[in-house]
Image: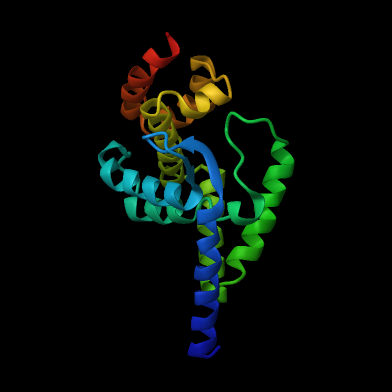
Length: 193
């Protein structure tokens, strides 16, 4: 492969990744002025991982977590966002995401395509310390956006604290237990209104 071919593939991928900014998520911005897009979400949770690195276990490599978080939602370009509190066919969504991962990572030069896909698969499986922490951070950010915006998508989807505990809390507690305890105490008053 020539250097020009490699650069062309890399730039094609990067320009395609810009489409992530067009994917709207259920969570609003903190000021509730509009919904967050998936590009903003990916950047924000990468920053969350840097800032909250002290909440990670001793085996977690934050640089790998940040890389995971930067690419974890890229499949939404083709598959769309599936809100955690929304109703959708989980198996069908997972199939769409796998097909999107094949297409999108396939735009890259072969070495990067394999590396990025492996990192995405690792995040999805959530069995390594890095992926478990990454999943925790991915779940914390929307909680804080919803709390800061006066309920955000919680109101739209009629979410209960029990649903937060089962759909979100379990994953956050697995990778960042002290963070979950703190965040849960912070959001709980919203649900007692």
